Image 1 (tube, rainbow, N blue to C red):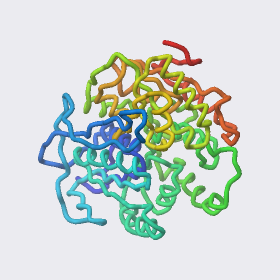
Image 2 (tube, helix red, strand yellow; image 1 turned 120 degrees about the vertical axis):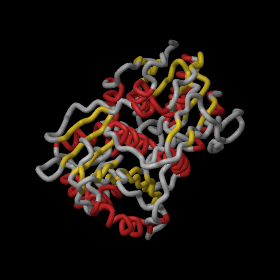
Image 3 (cartoon, helix red, strand yellow; image 1 turned 90 degrees about the vertical axis):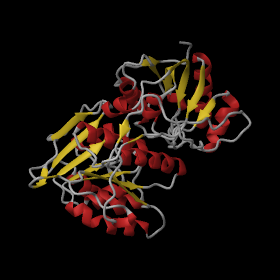
Image 4 (cartoon, rainbow, N blue to C red; image 1 turned 120 degrees about the horizontal axis):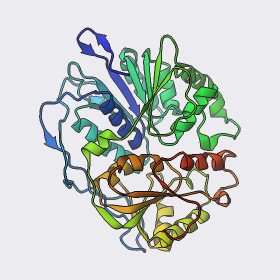
Length: 416
């Protein structure tokens, strides 16, 4: 879907809504793939923050990583956004001809907010306007956020979103008149979104499917149904899915564009490769899918079998769980300040990256293409699942691994 002119001589204005660092990264990848550019004049190098281990000793509690600026090897100069008129929420107004405005619907989780701020800095360095909304900062925050965005939503000719399951995004979709809607990856949830859209089902996250709708679900059902209708292509609306995930059930009229992380590979690295192995964490315990004790045992056995020394924590993993992992496994716990695709591309990274079924089994091989790093995936044993896990959990997780390309599949925890 190429940029469409809204007025003679002016590019179409695009409004993108993100709620996680990965969503923001994938909006940057989408903008790069479609030729949207920033509008700045000055040039300065990107200085990403250093990733520091948060558990240097086994007896210390997990704390967020401190940020210390470093200049990575082969950092490319980029262009920051040019200042303009003051806009809503204190943000500068987009310069004449600006093509993309990123709206961050900020969550409350401190680790997610920290990564989002770092990604917002990268977006500004690329020349895009970023509007930070404290969308969950109190009971009246949603009303202020939606009211402040209503005018921009009505004027936007293209809407990009990272999470079509988000109630916030679904509510915003009821306001927009945009003819072009784009969904960028929000991890493995994208696979389920496309499948549900193709089958005409209500939009429900995979790990919640199978449960009875709660009171809030029933109250919000009309908005969710409206969002699903708007995300269905028609004569008046075009829908694109920009994804690195395998999409098999493509709804009629939906355009699927492959995300191969071209921007990430061009912008960072190549990384320094270490001899050891790194292990990637997952939030399956936090979402109630996998039992915490079984997960800890699996991590310990996997690290021992493959000689892993570092554990890259998922941003949603609890400090208590990470502290226990550090004490009982001896792993060095690292809280990345950017999405793992950028951390791995910047390096240093282990020659082998071990993971459980998650988004990174699809994205890391793309981000690390040509580096020689091997991505190995350990399947989730059915005995690890909790009693409350969705009936679809095992099949979905197995499908995440089985559809991944350029990975080594570990059917059992055994030495490499």
